[in-house]
Length: 368
Image (cartoon, rainbow, N blue to C red):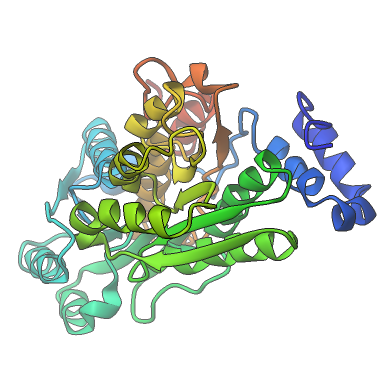
């Protein structure tokens, strides 16, 4: 039954999904496969707002991006993408390089306030709840403070910021769980690795737990590893859990850059044939791991698309336009079946079509 939707397009899968409420109760794997199929094709571009003249309104303006950690390839790639786009559009964009320490985020906030930036963008986990006084200081200096790629669509942005642009993290969580359900005939025993200090974790875990709640024979354990401890704690944690629970058949690192430390732990434990990895983000090096079979599945976000979306939202704020809360950044499930579409080696912008590139440039009144 788990293969009954194989090869269906998005429309067919969704039509089948609407006809399967009774089947879903009896066969969780079949219901999970519907969701997987719906996110396995090339996504469409949905404009997040009305067109505007980006070059004209951004002339002389500047944005400072403070990443959650410049050491995480996923986040660094997005920040670099914003650099390139700002250069194309003719305004200043800078990054505050850091290693994920809130003290470093505070230093970035102070730098923005003291150097005349129009917006400081807290990207993908840099959480303003850790430095509310500095947020207020920056705002008093005329700097707008925004959070981007921080929360799920269903979670309000942190209090006190000028805008928050969200991602559908909850759906990503469901897809990670649904993938494991389809691959095990609904008999998952998963180790889920999270970082609780990131607000996005709440939505991802909610999606995971909702999906697993529909699978009576599925079990899981959630383990928190703070971002600053990934390099030192993930590998020994995974090795210890695999030794203590030989029935684990999936490790789910909810952020795919964790895979750098997960896959060696699985290999050292001699579990590569029995323990698989399903994850989320679409970081190029992890997509390469999908190609070589080290990681089984990665729910991708086009990192270049994210850079476009977050910069679009920030420019709209500077230009006095309606704030963007839903980034409209889509998700796509990558596995052995479609991984060839991302290039070899994987490219951050391949595998999602190119409609978004032209779409954003039309929104910004730019022609390449």
